[in-house]
Length: 184
Image 1 (tube, rainbow, N blue to C red):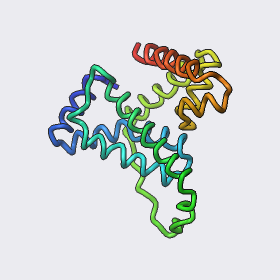
Image 2: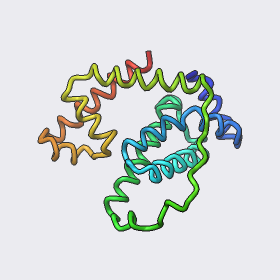
Image 3: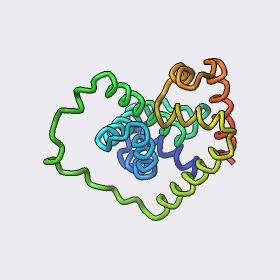
């Protein structure tokens, strides 16, 4: 995806363009839903994460800072944060799972992405998987626990027996490696 086009879209969203928001949604809904689905498992929760993320993009587009992250990186960070929040909320209130019978509800309409977007997303997913595979196992495992299971650094340290400072250092090092590899 074109980083400059993304920056222009986020600027247009900040200025109130719903069309620009729709274009960002079309570009990133697959990535956001996929990440959310890996973290929260339940489709209903993942769909709510998607809604929360794009609502936040709409609300906070004016606060986006390109020097801190690419638009894609910012949206993925929002998705990860929202998904982990949803996961922790479910863990704190497991009785909510017994609520409404969802069988009678109509499913959300599926959005069909254009072939270009599907191709770009597929290439990004392949690049991420390849880059993850190149990480040393002691870094890759920690990244997977943090991003796909939504564990905090302290929880990772407790689960793996790796000291907290080491967990933080390995995750930071892995993230720098991933950023460098994916930016090129």
